[in-house]
Image (cartoon, rainbow, N blue to C red; front, side, top):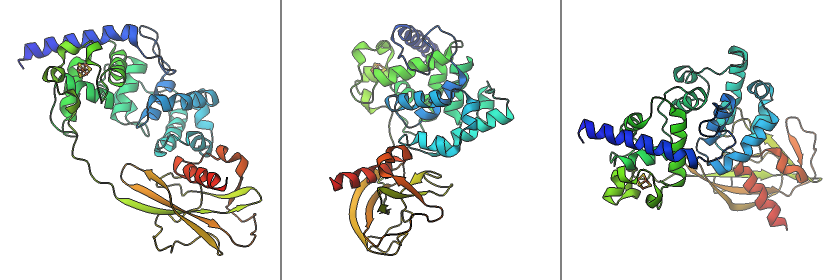
Length: 355
Ligand code: SF4
């Protein structure tokens, strides 16, 4: 495409998406309405961390819980990490929660509770990557930054029919987003593009008939919208096995705190074998005695592998319930334990099995 026609197309896209946003912006608890004041950077940061790998629908109630319980970054910094992790339970990707707390402490102790405003400074914060830094700088501080999340990636790849497979295609997509991002109001424009991707330019069956940039869309002209962005071939995920241990006594169950490093680090959980249980049942249980094993009661998918879980239920003699380092949690209050989804699924299975 000649440079002039590319610029003209970029200007049109920018204007049309901006105009569409005025009347069609999603109302989200962390946002300001179009044309309103810039939103609180604490809210923008918190929501953007929560939204990584997670849908808006799943995040809303967590956002409200967090801001109700810890209304400022200082209050979050003063919370116990265990409480933050427990409040995060169910959102997944728990390294985000640990970094969230670490970042709140850093801002409170090193920066007097004030968020840095520039994209380059935001990038230095724990848990803040390129996307999040650009989103906070533009949405909360009005800096011109180029924001590309998964929704924007799809929208832009289609508008310009970018057919270089991901992840190589990311550089081209970013350059195209740069070309359509206006000098002023980059944050509102990014949110407008996110909304377009979430509600109109959806991955399946995009609603091209109501799209404000249909006339500028190269994929729509080609008639193969769903083939953009071009994804790399799918890798088959390896399957790992784990064994969880269920020890119940006097209406309480035995919980453990996972090691601080590694997956689901620092979270409360059922005792387990370190996710290395062998199908021949040689995983060492936390207590010697009789165990009844239920095979493959839960399947859970992580980014790089799938996990199949066996549940071993203690059938042995009565045991002491005041052992050091163990947590005996009342079964009636198990929902308050803040178990990650994987363990919550196993608990649910066990309680249902008993009915
Ligand atoms: Fe997406 Fe269709 Fe709009 Fe193109 S015309 S941006 S494919 S919704």
